[in-house]
Image (tube, rainbow, N blue to C red):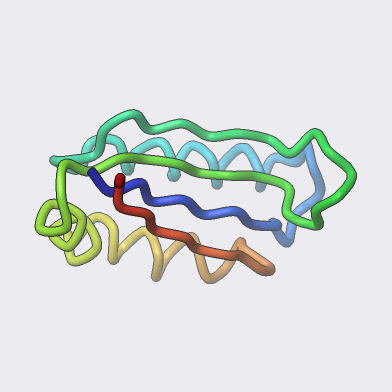
Length: 96
């Protein structure tokens, strides 16, 4: 199993219409074949500058690679991620 994790900070204020529209687009990623256990979290601690986290699982590396090259994922990154995200950290883990 591969766990894809991305923590990030948006360019928009918390609670803004832009924030809501961004997360509406984020949730569409769940329609891509192979995405499992998709969850979105809002940061509650004070020890990180990142505001949000996206987490999803994939059966294996091949399925994860299919996701990263899927036209819907590429379109999301080009049309929504770059224009809305100020900074991020991406981590991908394979279960032991």
